[in-house]
Image (cartoon, rainbow over all chains, first blue to last red):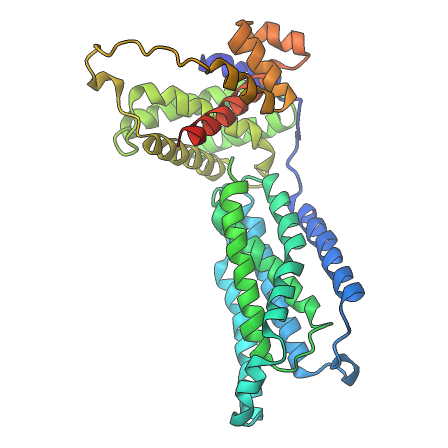
Length: 212
Length: 182
């Protein structure tokens, strides 16, 4: 095939498809919000309310929601940057949620008896919580990956991993509405594992789905 | 260098607004510049001279398909460099996975491979799995030998769209064929 001919043909194809730069961030925000709505509806309709919400905003709920939302914000910024071929994600922003979580953990450990730590860490149903967060993250992960396909990520696995952190961060924040456990130790370990798994899943899916 | 950035960015802006003249000028310019770069950097990427046009065409196609991801308020060169690199790395990786060797290294004594019997049937099946548009394009171009222009008018597509469909269909078929053999 002749390159000059190809160029000519591509030029004649110029009118088709999106002509102007697609405004990417509202597109991504919309995808995230709609999918988060699905996860939120599932939590509200299928799961019970957390018994701790009635007592006001306790430190566990506050810290885990704040860490989750900060994680989502940092991962959103990275995902958006990675949707452009030349994008450089600011990965060090991911340190912010870790700092929030660690300071919350510090307060809890300083404030509780050492003999209660093991009980706090294991809670009532660690695997149930892990699975719930993992499954509830999937709609958001799928929506973000779909939105990324319209972009041009040149680091598909990293973009997928960031999409997973974004999905996991939002889900852990929403999940505080249900989570019956009242310990940040529990949240950090089990929700953390779930978010890590979603991110890994995102990386694997990204490697396959985000090629172009 | 600064000059070229200005020129390319202006052309790309015009192309995004629909100017095919600016688009042809840009793509031609990018091709010239890529050929120069490839001629000096061939060895680094383990490319042979016959590959250059192939890679170039994949890059041009990628620029075309992703042209909406360039933001007019951002520099053009980094965007172009990222796409070029992405496609180049992809090309080299794909080829090394196939374990293809330069044909020049072999004396021309290998007998012509007989066509595998039964290949005609899977071919029909393979084509059947393609999206309709891609299948039609392959059937016209590769099987009936219709020209690109005639295929375009017959299928009521632009010539560019025919090229795009053809490339995608070939990529799908190649991937499938390799998977089946593996």
